[in-house]
Each structure stands twice: as C-alpha cells, then as structure tokens.
Image (cartoon, rainbow, N blue to C red; front, side, top):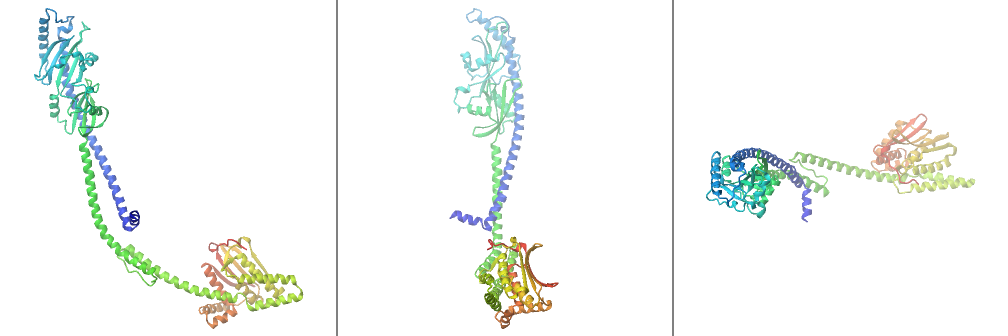
Length: 605
C-alpha cells in the first residue's frame, strides 16, 4: 500500500515538482561540494607538500651540519699514534697502565681540538680488540651498559660492514619488541670503525651515544612541527629518531606508504635523503585538519542547502495553493461534464497557463455541443435516407415491366433468356434486400449489370451498355446502392424518352489521385438551370421528411435521388464530390473520391 501510495504521489504535479526540484538542486549541490572539496584537498596537499619540502630541506641541512661535526669527532682517533703503528696494548703487559694513560691523554688533547658542543653526547668510547681504551661520560645519569659484551650489540656487525663509514643505529632493535610497543628514540648510537693500516687485523671502534633532546629543541626552534612530525631512519629502515612516538607497525607504514595512520590521526608523508650520510628524513603532515575542513565544508553546504530547501518549501506551499486554486475549477468543470452537464463553462483562472486550458475546455464544450447537434441531425437524415432507400430501391413499375417481359419471354419460348433474366432478378433482389451499409465496388458493378440486363429486356436494341472496372478497383469499399439512383435516373430521364438507340457507359478508374465513378449516356439530356432548381427544392423538402411534399417527391425521384447520393457521399467522405453535367451529346454523372480516403474490402464475392 505504501509503495502504491508513493507511486501515486510521484505521478502528481506536486510529486513531480518536488522530485524535479530535489534532483535539479541536490545533484548539482553534491557535484559542486565534491569538486570544491577535491579542489580544497588538492590545494591543501600542494601546500602541505611544499611545506614538507621546506621542512625536509631544513632538517636535512641541520642534520648534515650536526653530523659533519660528529664525523670530525669520530675521525679524531686517526691522529692518535696508536692507530698508526703496529703497537697493540695487552692488559698483561707491565707497561699497559702507562700506555693506557698516555693514550687517554693524547685522545683528550685531540678531542679538545674539536669545536663540537658535547651537550647531546651522552658518552663516547674507543674500543680496540676487546679493550675500552678511552671512555668519557658526558651525562652523569647515563650508564654505559653498551661497553659490556660489545660484540653482541646490534650495531657491532653493521659497523664493521660499513668499513669506516659512520653507522647510525637505534637504541633498541624494533625486531625484538612487540608491534604495538612504542620505540625508544630518546637516544641513538653513532659508531665508526677505525682502521689501522699497519695492523689490519686490529678491530677498533669509536662509539658515541647521542641524546635526541637537542634535536627536539632545534626542531621546535625552527617551528617545523606544526601539524607535522619528523622521523629519521637509517639505510636499513631502522628508526633513529622521531618527534612523535611510534610503534614498529607505524614505522612500517611510514616506510611503505605515502598516507598512513599514526597516533590516532591520518598523515601524509614525504621522504628526503641526506646528502652525505645514509639517512632518510621523513616529514609527515597531519591530514586531520584537511578532514575537518572538508567536514566543515560539507556541513556548511548541507546547512545552506537545508535552509534553501526550507525557503523553497515555504514558497512551494504558497504557489501550490495558487496553482490548486486554478486546478480545482477545472476539475469541477470536468466533473459536471462527466455528469452530463454540457452547458457548463469554466471561469477565468488566475494562472495564465491554466486559463488557456480553461479557454480550450470551453471551446471543447462548445464544439462537443455542436458535434452532438450535427450528429443528431445526421442521425435523423440517415433514418430518412434509410427510409428513402427502402422505398426507392426498386420502382414498382420497373418490377411490373420486368414481370411482363418474363411473361413475354415465356410465351415466345425464350427459356434460356428467361432463365438468365430470372437469375439476374434474383441477384438484384438479394442485393437490394441486404442489410449491409457498405459493399465492394465489384459487387456494386455486378448489381448494376444485373439491373441493366433487366432494363435491356424492355428496351431491347434501344439500349446498349458497357461497364468498365479493372480488377484492382473491385475490392474498394463503397456505400451500397450508391450508383443505382444515378443509373436509374439516366435510364428514366435520358434513355426512356429517346426514340433512337441509346448507349450507357459505367466507368470506374483512377485519375489524378482520385477514384472516378462515371455514368455517361447519350439520351435526351436535361436543362441545367431546371435541374439546379429541382435540386434546391429537393434539399428544402428533405428538411421535413414527414411532410406530404417529401412523400410526393419520393415518387418522382428525380432530384431527390441525386440529393441523397450527395448526402451519402458526405457520410462516406467529406472530400467526395458529385458532378452532373452535359458534355456535348452526353449526360455525365461523375463521382470523385480522393485515393487517400478509400478503403478496401477483405474479400470480393
């Protein structure tokens, strides 16, 4: 029921207007808001990308300068005589203690020559073949646990693989902790192998532990962390530093995706490679602001659309009442017409379009009344035509003359001719008594041929006739007994008064896009003026079919028959015409019907 109710509402003007309004406004609004959000997002990402590029460049330059100083510190041991000789310290050697102190003094002097601030260095150690030759603790709270089992540290083998290059390694190996545990980036290791060219078997390492506090402060001073964070990874993808606490799972997203989720937010990242070191700086910009701005745009558009929808609804209610005030009178008028009141009319309406419709309805009512009047008169005329047809199908004296001819033929012994004449009369009567209103042109011609055969029995050599009708015309549908009054008129008023032999010709043909039915005879003819006067009298008489004048005229059947032929032609086709004229020695009755007006019988018996 609800579905049917909606379908009914959808097919109303109100439903169509509302649906059309929603479709024509909602879809463009959605498209415009979508395009606006896409454009805003593109601009936001472009701006963020430029900002991240600047931030990445600044961070990369900062790290390059910082690590250049670290590189200088780690290169200092090369200037120590211990790493440029074949001497190797041995703890069991009696001179070990003096050699150890001498090495430390020399290294202290070398490190004092460097200009790098030690505020971020937590400790520094020099390790050679299992011995910690030099160690300085810059952070008193820091415990140098790395010097224990140094060969088992995760950065040990990595440092040897780099063969003298700086190795940056995290404080904790991410592979050894759970994915959802935050990685410790409070410090990281920088190590380097010191290669003694005089003793290649000697393994020497410079080990620094750096705090990230200084780096945090430098990044804050550069104001690079608004809605973004910076992380640094080594060539193995290990996290060296991050301004935002990360888990190993977050780190994996940073390394593999441009957009990722971290710390409950969405981020868009760009990566930059340091020029002099195998380190990658990752700058990520938070997309939450973008999402919030897009959400604000959508909410604002929705609010504006709803406000516009509310205003449109108020206007719609007002105009709907205005339109309904014009529709209801039309509906009332239709209801009265449906109830049979054809005298009703619709008043002027306030809506111009509906007022045009009201005028059309009033015109339709007037035309309908006129049509009913005409149909009524036509029905009366048709009844009169039917009465006339029944009264004038065959004249009594024609039947009387035909029967006398049959008696004469019988007395003369012309049985063959008599049989043929009887068959013709039988066919004629059967055709005349048929109740069908229409017949085929072929059947009409066959009826007229039987009629002429019987007339020829009376007139003998005084009457000769010919019927011309091609086979393609015989199936054309025509009113029954249409041509009989014309043919009968030709015989009675043209051939019968003549004392010389006469000729009657019926021609059915197509000519100039018309079907032409022509009856021509060379009888005595008629006076044109007298004929037209009788035709006018016949028209006046048929207006009162019950009058004595009408009954008297049907007995003469001169102009009355022609008038009824004209009326039957009008009922058949408004474009059909009848013309009766003198053409030299011939009297011609010609019917013309346009070919587009004709139809065909399905069969022609």
